[in-house]
Image (tube, helix red, strand yellow):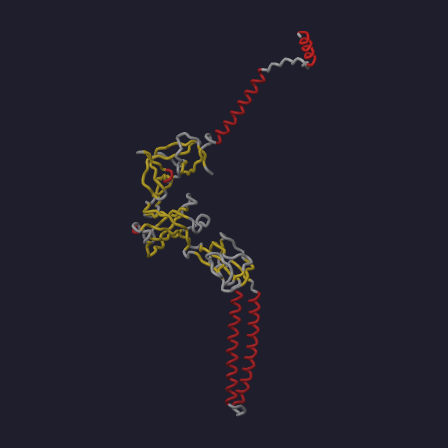
Length: 401
């Protein structure tokens, strides 16, 4: 039994697969390991720094304005209001009295046009044909009138000889009168046909700006056609008169007594807060708004800029107690949006060397352009407008472009 087991073990040993001995592992070079570790650490650090720069480390972007010294006394502000730019004649809708297809329309919204510029042309071939026909009818009537007058002259010469009866002579006179009336009628028809042809060219009656086009090239003007909302059946374009730009403002009826016709004012567009336009009160509407408790008034802008005072743009209007006067004392004015108060301290945020600095100031009176600064600032200082809540002293900031 034991012998058989021993023989079986020998047989199993012969069936085993002999594996070659494994070569000894090479020991890792410590320099290579250190290099790999440092490289990985550098990559992680670079990624972390990039994330920091783009998030927490990014300079805070702020809006700024430069303080400039002014010479002269700034008038006090009586009251302020918000409104919109309008024109004296509000908006003018230009149309046509005739029907037809638009074959030319060389205008676009926002385009400035001058008096006499072509706004649109309507196909005038039908009207030209009607004009030629009216001229031909008039010419026939003129020839008939000449014939009747010539015959009347001959009859008048022989009337005294008794060669013609009174009835025949009266008939000849009546014929000439009818022919004269016919040529007047036909001449009026020619004038009307010319008017129809002239109406095919629609020109601007004012210097203005195109607010809205109701028609496009190829549209047919007819009483049953499709039109844009706000346009009539024969309306083509809406213009705004740019000769007299105004700001329309609603004033609280309790404060309307503070202003009168001719009161000086300034207009500042919301889209261009650094632009200021002198104006004066030229219109007070006679009726108040019962629901709002306001009175509508209009101020006329002295020298409007069509790039900054477009119709319907929102503006802030300040009414002054007088015109600015010349003087020698420099006056530093800080915008109201830049001045902050904390407890009993009034301060502004200034940008110096790319860092935000909290600068205490001594404020004076409030004027139309902002707040008078008696101490703390100098001419040329850069102030932060509407400082964000997370602004802190010494924080790195960047100026918005």
